[in-house]
Image 1 (cartoon, rainbow, N blue to C red):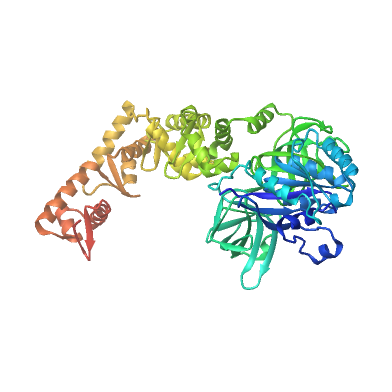
Image 2 (cartoon, rainbow, N blue to C red; image 1 turned 180 degrees about the vertical axis):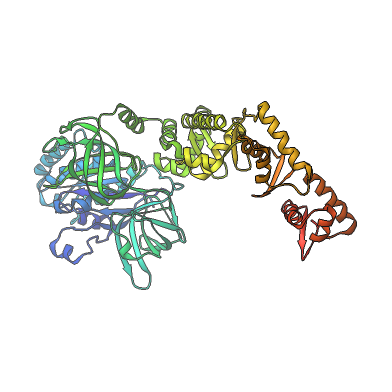
Length: 632
């Protein structure tokens, strides 16, 4: 079912709250001060049963200039607006400011409602209609229905309800499969239940027992209960006003302006790359680093505007801006925002977020401008590729990529497997997919080849370089899982080989010089003279007495000719074969053997037989049972 939010907008005391009561029968002013003063201060909410049978949610916003920040919070999630102008007063300052805010925040549909028609003569009403239509020229309401009503007498109310019902048919259904996101506009406690937050669910579906993360702050709680229009429900959908009862979170952990999201589906940042439209009505140009009030969702954050492509923005002009905020905000690509001047507080502009968690940008950089223009206008396929490229050597997963570029995971996943982009990325670690851009992968590959070539040149007799040494020294930005996946891809491509936690180039071979071959033969001869009672490595090297002997000895260990059982004990491979055969023959006949029996069998000492038995245990040839060994 399509879920719809209807909002109001307009100057203070133009009858917005009375109009909602005439339409729904509900009083949205709930604060004692609101009732006493006769003006809305906070946001008001009511369910609205439309003639066609659909139930919508209504958000009533305050009209006074002192409460514009509340009005902006109320626009979040509006599908259509009832733009209210009192017939006895006509267009007023907040009429114009609210219209600018609705435009900047991307509201596309609405109905213009002239209220209080019972207070004016027909001739005056016609003059007001002309004034309103003139004020709406060039706006999204230029061709909107215009109806005259009286909330007191009921004049025009049935016709307005019919018009609203018809317009809701044009509202697009929201994506129920996206990760849920709820900008919070109220936080309170109910005795016996605990913390409750309310807001308009912008995306996804939220269910009882779901985990929810509060941003900024990264505090996680559990959804205990859900209410929509005052009734308990097992789940709530995008486009509904929702009250969420949260456990594991105290009311002091949450504030208006926070966002409740599916865990790890969004992140908060103190920077945002944006396209900014400075309103023609802005009282002055916008200079670089101007301090502003940044409004997005239900949040208001102080910050500064860093102009990226222009020295300053003139009223009516557009530009690329990085907002650097004084507190974190949870934003994603495609979000709408407005900015107000620091003092006096006037709405001066707004636009669309292009990147909600960007790096710090430098001004007048052609590559930066090109990248942001791509994010603004690029096709989804281009955004997917750009997102992977920007992730660089750290790589990026599907969920993080979808979050970064502001597209549903299913859509991003489809683009990742499309032929036109598949060749431009490399999938790392398929079990927990990470993606590297092909350009980044190729650069990493060339760097690795260069380092291994240098290592092989310096140590020609060593099989390869220790994997962790290679990562720590030259690829420290790559997490271990990503580095392992990167190496696996290179193994598959026959660029490198892996063996016992060491890495070498696929083409690399250990080749002994004539002198080294002579040393190799002398080492083997020394160990095979008494194969089951061999001299220690230090003793062998002392016998050879050659500066290259340690490297040759190490090469024989790496290639498996010598098997080192400890720092001071190594056997020739032939000796281990001999010892293994004797051990197997004995066990096949007797079924078991002790250390002493094995010592006598090999005619050697305990110094050698115990390490040999422990080696065969480790090879899962034998296992120890008490003081004896048996076959596994």
